[in-house]
Length: 456
Ligand code: BES
Ligand code: MN
Ligand code: MN
Image (cartoon, rainbow, N blue to C red; front, top):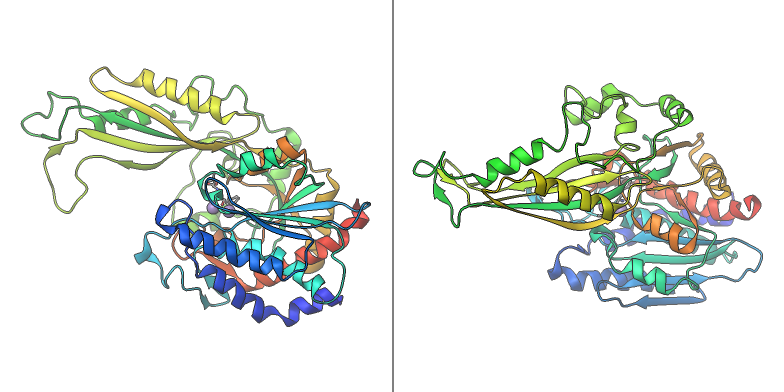
């Protein structure tokens, strides 16, 4: 076994302790009261990078959260890998559904439970420790490395996009390496070659100037909550087709080869249903569950409110009702154009008895990595060597919009080398990451860097 691989085995427990330290910091990017925690998480990572004797380590302040950057590029004739990860996390709520506190990492049955354990602190940290394994064993890191760790991924990377545009030269690279996705199944390594894009909208329906007695006014005055439901019910038909005019215009259809490849993936629909306690799956007619969840666009209400929400019954006709709606997009849909189509359509569905306002939150483009890219081949071999199993290539339904920006601005493909699992319940209570995958992730990253020069 190589010295770095041996080092990783010997420092397993220390790496876990360090990750715990990072997981204890509630660096929730959407919550303005967590600014100090964001600073602390960025500082923690900067300190860890400084221990690596890189050529350069710097924290870039932005109008939002800092970007932690490191660089070590001694070679003229070897590839440059830009490693990307995010240290911000989603809010932990609902906290009462966690079996252990979200920011007190706890190990149970081989899993680390904490917000950010998988998304993305645990996964991002694998690469930092892989680099350490080279540096601390006196071995040269085998390729040029640039590392970029941001603190705003969960809010749509508003400051990273301009940052990469302004630092094109500094960030120039041959590929991006990202661990922020899931493997196809436990012990089944996979490389994600496609991600969906996103358009996130909010609808507000306003009716009378105050909540009204539902007996005194009900039936005579339009109810904004009813209107909102009517609008939403018209956004998809019974076959799961989205009804917004023009929505599918730019959708890139799956090729026959792709559909054949989907069929070969070892997907167990029964187990999928059981894991979710549902009796049946549901989606766009004519497509399989895997296709629906990764290569076809979708539209979903993410939150809906209005009227009385408390205990018991209050007879009231709400003056307002709102919903948040996300659309997952596929190549070549443009999130801004889709947002515009959505707005126009929802407004056209609104009766003149209410006022309807439609606004857009963050969005992003979908991405697909070219399967012939040599970096993927090195990634596949690294996975095979460490997991002792052949890699699968699959697309996923989640979004990492910066992947498309990296491609557009830096011209580089991304290798999505996820070590997570769908059972990690990211964004939900009891988020977890397996100790085994944290360890194998570090080893796979180190192996990848070692293999890469031979593949380029
Ligand atoms: N790591 C996830 C994206 C992801 C999850 C990709 C699972 C593939 C599989 C990322 O942190 C995330 O949550 N992204 C957001 C989008 C962002 C713009 C808020 C998402 O997908 O909702
Ligand atoms: Mn993530
Ligand atoms: Mn996330």
